[in-house]
Image (cartoon, rainbow, N blue to C red; front, top):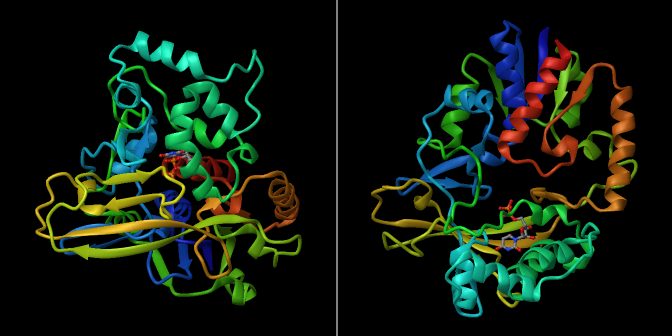
Length: 365
Ligand code: UDP
């Protein structure tokens, strides 16, 4: 009898397992995939750590979370400085003085401010009602049309008018020449990849891979006092209120016989005619990588269907209501607790998942 059976060896499950094991609890962690690390999983190809489920860049401000991950890996000094290709031109992201300079030729913050003011949407004091209003009121029409509208419509397959403003609030807007995508104090990528970091995190903890908890849940539940479920909450309840909707991505990954394909880890594509949202060149997540080849991935947004990987929760009203109903059922479970991106139906960054696992563990002991 284990103290905890943890379903899912991703960030939430592995953090929870580590905290429990550090307290002397016995844990069994299982995953239906054949690898640990969930969507953070990396695989080495041509001497390069490939982010198999899309780019993962660690960033946080929290000392405790940063110390926690540093127990399991050294982090390199990677700073995400994506660029966006639109209408044959290249712009810096997030929106900053380089972007404004390339867009309008302005050279000072004052000039940029005036240019934005001349074309931004005036909300007259009210809150933006959707993503389009949020973007137009922050950066004006030109940037919205070239760098936001097409990208967002591709990614979400919806008009930005029908999406919540919160989605774009993640992106900083700066009147400085600072291309760093994140504002956080601590940033980087694990030097030996995420999967090696997770291996360290799970040291001394029993792990079983390639097993489907839901197919035999009674037998699994009998093995532990408490079960921590980190999979899709709708799947746990047999989708009785309907499926929770996600957006997914198709990845096309290939090796290029050159040491540098696009000169940057992330290149976004703002044009709606280009089917992919971004191209990732994995070696650039590890500045100084010496491989003579390079591994490249195209990310093509796709409609989620069973068997695909759920990436972005579609947090509209229908899905949020559905999720609330599943939460009510979850509260009634006495032996099983829920946590993580798929159980909380939340678009989490990695550090937020760790924070959520810390809080959940603390609340339980
Ligand atoms: N976004 C955009 N243009 C870009 C990058 C992002 O319009 O070049 C918008 C888009 O709506 C996206 C949101 O900003 O869904 C959040 O982007 P982020 O880069 O944080 O998404 P992630 O890297 O998590 O996929």
